[in-house]
Image 1 (cartoon, one colour):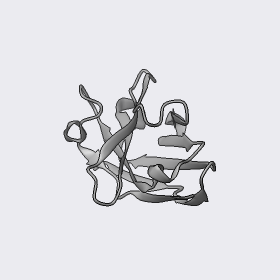
Image 2 (cartoon, one colour):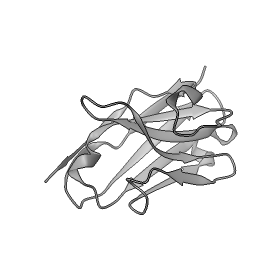
Image 3 (cartoon, helix red, strand yellow):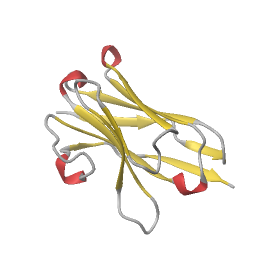
Image 4 (cartoon, helix red, strand yellow):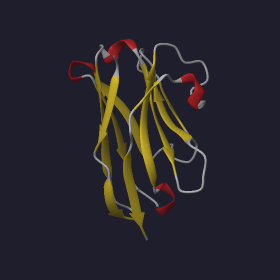
Length: 123
């Protein structure tokens, strides 16, 4: 059974940086397209970044140029390096994975989800 476990969230001031990690248990992460989503209070969950098995990355416009998604298949781990954080980046961040994703921003395209890690950015 596939499990995803996120870590690395925390509280930072605007302009700061955080690196989120997501470790996949139960299968080789190299076989999965993986992504980060986030959900702020009172808002719908939204796609942040996606990385396919060919290491092609996609980013939401709101984070492009500030966030970097990467993976270490030897460690079965996905990362999200977040620089230049803004208060509007405050949210619960979730890791997601699936064998086949056609609509990377659509949460319904991902079967496996972690429980999330909280990111809070103060002004």
